[in-house]
Image 1 (cartoon, helix red, strand yellow):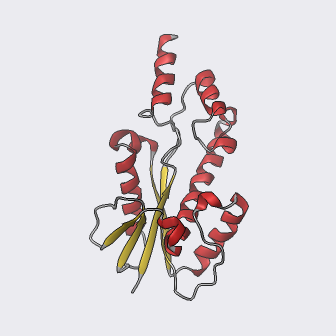
Image 2 (cartoon, one colour; image 1 turned 45 degrees about the vertical axis):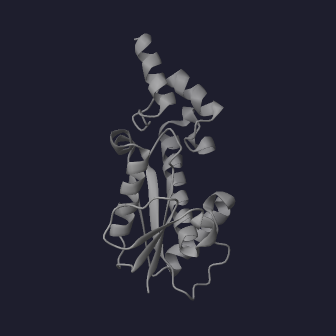
Length: 192
């Protein structure tokens, strides 16, 4: 039976896409240290991501853009990213295990597991791939907009990010439906 783990990364940031990964691991994989991606150092996540991609039966990563987040809402955009990741798999799994309490609407049996990224290795693997790809987007944004410090806060609403948002205004990749970004747009319009 082919079990696929699915998890997301990037629901909370004020900027960029929400990412989801789907991973089908073989039962005899030799990957040591799979866990919730937030509990692993960035260096170790990157090492594990290489092992996951090389040892998986199948894996994929997909995303929903900031525009899609604004149109749908963050929950529905996350479900969309998960559905996309599942549909991109090279094989069709028999069952999908999803981290959290909701599942996307798809034609494969799904089970939501709260804190599944800490208890199911296939979900942990998906968590790591989603986070590594989400961080890569933050680094790419940092190259284009270094004044925002995306390499430091990855787009989360830290004091540094909020200060830059106030000073420089939103960029096209900001999520307008998120309150701090909406406020920055409103402030900009006041001074135009």
